[in-house]
Image: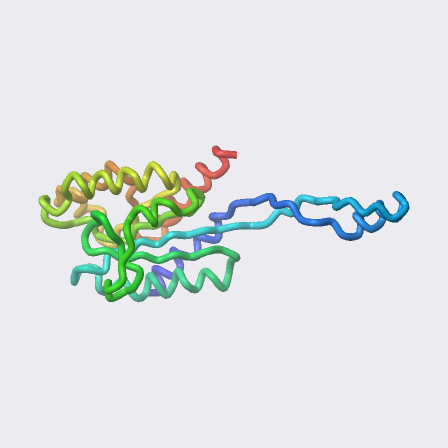
Length: 203
């Protein structure tokens, strides 16, 4: 857990400056008095740090059991450190038409609702990406492609050793669709660095 905690702390580097307009009350009053009581609203720009995170966790198999609770809880801790939105979704092995909003996977929503979210969300998929080849069918591949197209800053964090990725056909395929990183301090750092690069590139 400490290892993952240290890795997730790298998320503090994922920041986005957002410019919003707000009413500048002192200036509005001052200029209004000069105009003889004609108070026209004067706005000023306010820079705020925004960090929106969508966490998608594979919690459907025994191989992922050791990671689910710790990863969810650690990402939630980030809410106390930074002003950001955190959304969590769950799935089993892969995603077709729905994702689950609770850990037990009893409540679900259509994937289109997820894909309608703000494209500025950083998306972290946590899973071993290993399953029977037939499970990763065309419908599922289309979903992952749509997810990556919508959310440019998407990273797949794989808790299994990188040396074993080549032994799984589905892991290799998903690795081609979405940038995959080991769920280690160095791996998450690399994922965050790439997200930062894309953020500044878009500006």
